[in-house]
Image 1 (cartoon, rainbow, N blue to C red):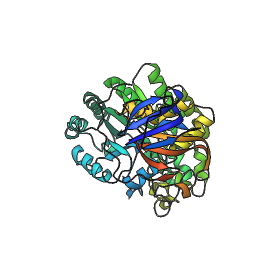
Image 2 (image 1 turned 90 degrees about the vertical axis):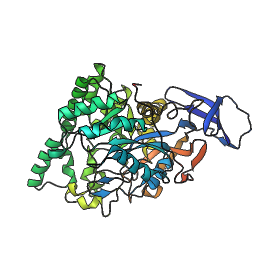
Image 3 (image 1 turned 90 degrees about the horizontal axis):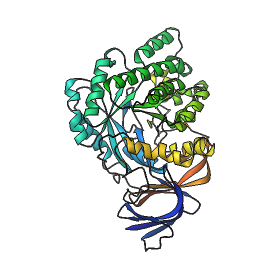
Image 4 (image 1 turned 120 degrees about the vertical axis):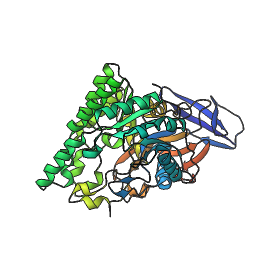
Length: 458
């Protein structure tokens, strides 16, 4: 099957130009001016942008968090992804204590295969560090998983000691993988939570007090310092604050291979949401920050100290899940949906506001994540030989986001009522149209598991 996309403006992380693209057997075979070859389908992209399919490397489908299961499994979550222009996800495969990495990977593959609408791979998220688990990392890398994740916000028995963290960093790097860290100081957070509870301050407006930016910055500094000792690269997830980016920038200014990810909600929403009567809808960790942090994060993007913007899609219902924490936020599950809105939010808050250009939008949402996680140049760009994953994006479309437009199974969207300028018009994956004007026509099971290349510094 051949598809010809004509008259569009092709935008990659480095270039912007008008051209046609010819697709054969799921791969881009030709890019040029006024291609006139016979094709099974011709798509007119006049007055629209043609972008590489978005790559979201921070999702949680069919996952457990705080004793509850997300409402989006791989079918509904990737349907929402496809509607929003995301053609590849890397999901967090959560290792249960005592479970091998092989068992964990197979469990998540089973969840995704026959269900995922888009292509997928996994980070292996470790719950424990011991010799048995560390010895399994090379085998997981050979099976195509080239990133491993740890959380530093645990306390007590879940606290990750410095020696174990250094061992994890070095063993991961030696195996050819990238170490990913969620960095907050869990022991200090536990102290603050206990103090707040004793004072009866348990409503969600106290969430920023329990997890202030200083606990994020301290953990970022700790992780960076230990990575420097270990002489390893490091990928830091969920960056939310000016305090944390200060630590990243200082490390990168010294030439350290430190890479940072923020999420779309940290660039578009502030902590005043927690003052709302339904503020528990916005419970996430780290929490949303005061609005001045947003400006600092955008500046860090332009200075190339933030490299990736993920969605951290972790969808729960408000009714029966999030609202259980209305009086005590610790009783609610953390996280909310956002995979469908990511591109439009970033186009509006970034490109249309003049903070970044369209090339940087592509870099943040597609090219850099593909490079960092062993998918480039198959994914993340529009080039001859690359997978024909692309988003035809209408930069002039005005849309008001609402639950009525959302394909997530969650009963709300945190972006309700937000006006966006720019919207996904059509999505193609490996040469097949999977979304057309907001309607997903891709089928569950159409997505393929992606065995990724070993890590190399971009």
